[in-house]
Length: 314
Image (tube, rainbow, N blue to C red; front, side, top):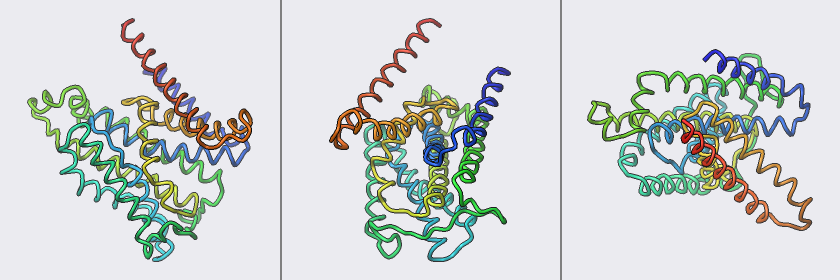
């Protein structure tokens, strides 16, 4: 345990020093987006890895957080911390409303229900033009400020994202180690056995769904403050699939899995966007998608083989 804590401390120190080692706003921007995605995937990892529920609609909660911040700060001129607080609460309330009936569904039906929810919300982002600006989106979102500190530079927002992500990861770690976390692990192993031992499985799954939606709203609100612009494009079906992909690639049920999964998927996408035109002149975006898919499949095969060898050696 002591060695694990030392590794975590070393990793945190490295992340603190990265802006001074890299000295590139482009890479800093990638790290910020990776950190925001990791916040979403931490909640999704708890939902999938412990409560056994798959959601293909978390981009909707991510978008709700972003649009809440955008509307409250540009149209109503709310203080940025208060707008961010509402960006957490609103997705949580929506998750509570839809979670109770939706989480009764099983496997493919649950996947389709969350997928439909995500598509519906994405359509609303496009169609509610008086509120969301439609496909053009909303501009003029102010930078996040806390007291007299304005996060108007990449390096400031990087440390804000790192601080929030660290708190989220520590909170998730404490939750997993708590009585609630042990009950969630029991659900993951066998929902029927958990029910017979007196665990309120439906209630716990709903709480995990709400918690994951709140984290997605938090990340979405911070994303809006970072880019100072929101439109429906970043909150569509493809983003929901990416979140699930990050959770699975990084490893469900691990503390560092969300960070690793988000980092791999985001960095891989950026690297291919840069490398494919150099390797294949004139290649379109479809080549990037093809290589992207091939590499991720290879990663999943490698991880599966590695885990199986680990199990066989035990």
